[in-house]
Amino acid sequence: MAAVNISSSPITQVSQHQPQLLTRLTLDLRGRRFEVDRETIMNLPESVLLCLFPNGLVLSRQSMALSDGGDNEEDDEVYGVDFDPDCFQYVLTFFRNASDAFYGANGSPGLLAAQQQLLDSVTSDFSPVSAQNPLLTKQAIIVLREELEYFSIPPKDTQASTDQNGIANDHLLDIKRRSGDYLMDKKSIFTALQRNVSKENNLAEQHLIDMLCMSGFNRDDDWGFRALEPSRCCISSIALVLLKTGIIHHPDGSKPDVDHPQMATAQKLLLFWRKPARKCWWDGLDVDLPAADDKPAVSVKLWARRVWTLELSLV
Image (tube, rainbow, N blue to C red; front, side, top):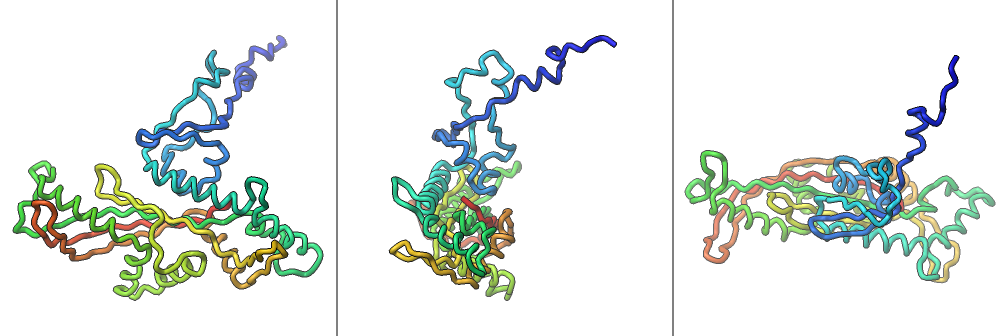
């Protein structure tokens, strides 16, 4: 049997050109550039990553690794991302501040240093706190996103209409813009869902509100970030809060106390919300849009399709 030249084998050739992992990514978010560490990207919530990279995220120089210029690290690739840059900055800032507070920064210890005493005590007594509990060694953040698509239905006696191709005229476009401004002012997180609970007497939705408020939100909280999407009748909102784990820290850095019922609740939420969960509902309102500039006041039927995405992220 003829000897096989291993170095010329196609399998060996492929293995000799392993893709070079990127340590930093340059992202272009609607004209605004961000240089982000690979680790920072991987720590972002799955629901946010899916919005940033709906076709998947490439973390290696696959195209450059198979070319002669694969070792030129100065030739950075820029990834175009259709995502609001201010929203992205809000998420990055919140996660960075949460990480610094938990792990420590600039030489000052974080919450983990005190919680290490809980981990040490697990092996020395019969504490109900388990050493396998990730909430002792990771910072948990609740991520709540809302995609709100709205539809404005003006009265028949107005000039607002569409042409034979379904293209809105200037009057209808103006009503849509004013409807968007009206909804942008409604910044409270739970108002729409609570209205739906009152209308439908939906106990499951009331339970969702109660669980969120027990876990870190307040009933009168506003969205942390809220913006109209360009060229769409859509508003994107996001709110981030630290999960209430039941770990009670003391100013002197001594061993924290643990509210065990709250810790048990937090562990259940981690089990249910570790992967993004979604909820969708419709909301219809009769709205009086006030006069603006030279446009008269008008009453419209405003329908909103809301999609909530809820997730627990560990940093």
